[in-house]
Length: 211
Ligand code: PRP
Image (cartoon, rainbow, N blue to C red; front, side, top):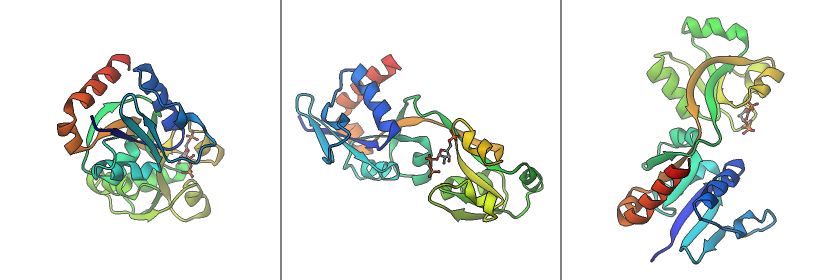
């Protein structure tokens, strides 16, 4: 039996996904040690390997088959646009992708004005404004703390993740439009799905049973 390899998005999502895997008997003690500098963790008994990667790299590892399975947010899946199968919504890390800004930006959106949109997710922002709203905008790619952009005048609005809404509130911004709901998904390499169909299908069934 060959190893099935899992790529997990680093951070909160990894912790929660490991808890879900534990419920279906898939364990990996080593990976839980926060001090370890190891990059790959093996469960010899079940012939499984796990590694943690930057969220935006998870779809890349899965598309190329370096990982058979990935656990990553829907935001990253949409943004990266990789060829893979999205098989389960794990129901964790629930939040929303939204257009946000000061209340005064509502009018600009309503009248389809040419505005600047800052986002860590330029592809999602572009798809939303161009394909869904048919509004021409200028998209500015940022790498974090996107809420700063409308505050300092870099853009009129942002497209960003809203979870509790407290970042927006504390900075005098609000949700203006909802782009889509988000949560963590399990994705599978297209060849692995065929070659390791039995093991992967069982995994999907077991997960569906406990979710
Ligand atoms: C995310 C997101 C928002 C914040 C939303 O940022 O980009 O800034 O969380 O959460 P809230 O609605 O509960 O306040 P993250 O912490 O990932 O860091 P970043 O801003 O550097 O991207």
